[in-house]
Image (cartoon, rainbow, N blue to C red):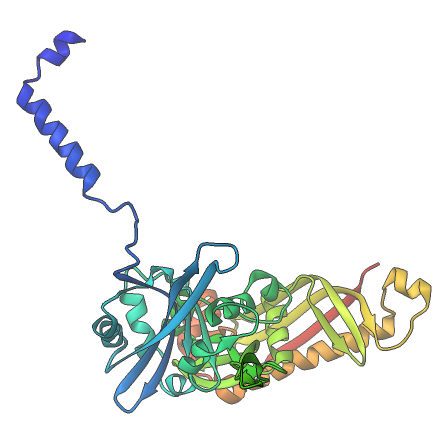
Length: 389
């Protein structure tokens, strides 16, 4: 071993040591200087007369003790003819470098969705430090105002909104989430369609009341309390060629989720009775024969979950459905599936990706029928509900 070490000159050892030191100390090891960097939690995009307005919600540490610890936020607007220019404007206004790697949510306002939204999202796809797994959402009104609102359930509106898009909410069939990557695949694919959860904000009851303040001259001064908001995302915005063309109702959103096979432990109500979905299997099938056909099928197992009247003890224990109930619930879900398809055909939005499935099934048939209007497509819709035995 000593002979092997002696055969290398001292200068070579010094050079190797210098290379190791240079490699070790030339990296920041993922450390972030919070004095120079803006950690963007969420971004909201609106259009104005000059182009775009980007509202960035930036994380601001609150403290380190048990009473003040946590994360608050500050919202800063950037303006420009492109979204990339808006990001540069944020840097010019604040001196903070916007760091998008922690951005998990992009919200599009009504004005942004009136035209092709990909001129808004293009900058995020080009940014190599922006994760394409970030969530997308559309909202009523201004995206900037939504992010600037005060949440009733969390320190920041972005964190409150992300709770709406949790896996548990998606499995319950209450929301249909999508990511930047999934929306881009649908936009650039054969169907040219996509969807996003549609967010609405409403004031929390009692949040606009004043609260006690300091006393002066024997009189109590009431300081105004900031209006707190709660958010809902049970509706779904649907897009064709990147333009918002319709909004699905909560019932249609639930039917869409059933078709995707996402629902587990989700609940729905029919004629004053609530049902719990224990198993869900959705099937979207394209038949590529001489003329294409489309079929939508849902098969789910349910049990009683609640009723608007008092039930017998044996009914409470079993939770099973009679044959008549199975047929009635199946008919109601079939109506919701039919309403979902009607909304797609009226908006000419290939939300269920018929054209993409047709091309995968038969490129020759796709070439012949790719321009067929959805309203002219023969469709079979069926929902089958079975009771837990």
